[in-house]
Amino acid sequence: MQIGHRHEVRILYGDPAHGSRALYRQAMVGAGFTNLREFDTLEGFTDLVAVAQSDLILMDTSLPGGDVARLVADLRHGKLGINPYLPLILTTWEAERSLVRRLVDSGADDLLIKPLSTKALLDRLEAVALNRKPFVVTSDYIGPDRRRIEARRESNVPLFDVPNPMRAKLTGESFDARGLQQAVMAMNEQINLQRLRASAFRIAFVAAQIVPLYKAQTMPDAHTLAMLRDLIVSTEDIQRRIADTDLAHVGQICERLLLPARQMYERGEDFVFTIDWQKSFDLLKSLGDAVLALFHPDRDTAALAGEVAVAIDRFQARRMAQEAGQLPQV
Image 1 (cartoon, rainbow, N blue to C red):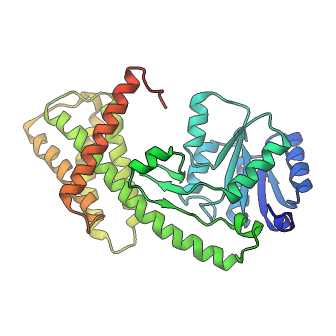
Image 2 (cartoon, rainbow, N blue to C red):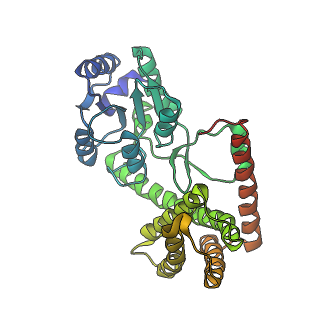
Image 3 (cartoon, rainbow, N blue to C red):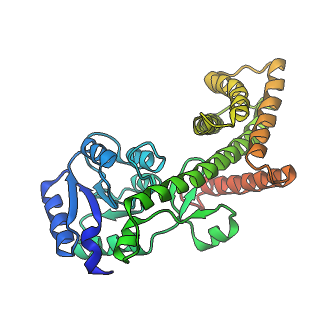
């Protein structure tokens, strides 16, 4: 890493402990990173990230004032700050498996378990700058792709090399504020389209599993209701993303889909099967397929249905393996 450009890198860093912040500052300044701004609460972070131009965020998960994982997800989904693709490293004292999984799934680039050495910190700064993972977009995740190489080869999900001004500065590339803004806007368009497609696929994926259960009058359990809730969230996400666009007709289809889905979810495990509901079940499935087709106009519907079927088979096989104790629950 070229030390001559490190002073140009803008870093926001936060920890509730003054001693930790002092150690981070000492380590980074000693390595040539002098453009630093610190915070000690999540409120302080949200205030800074909303207005401050930055190239990297380093923050501890125990910061008071809210849920760090939720905040990171909000950043990645464009609900917070001005650049959803900022490199972001989390630090934590807690190594409990479920918490680590939740933090990783928030979209952070890296998670450092404390205590950590100065070398470990600086090595991670260099890694996210020069060897950053490409981003992947699903119906509920935007962030670095952590899948194994084999899993990537089996998937047709596109990867995105998101803007990384820290890398540009450290390698001496030309990358001004206007250029960054244009790069972020262009990437936002690509990410938004992929998110729409991912949510549409998720809707068809869920509908194809739960509709047969309801048609067979299988009483919905917690798993079925969780999937139904997933369908609702994915549909609402599409509605939010196409607001004020020329896709009003898709919004109308989504609203028709949400009507029976919400009613089914609200009834929960007390659902009462009637003959009138059979048409609603068929409608839910057909509308789910329609939404998927609308976001893949160049794809054959039979091929799309085949991809949904393959995804369901893999999902159910993984779930059975987890229940049998052959795979870890995550």
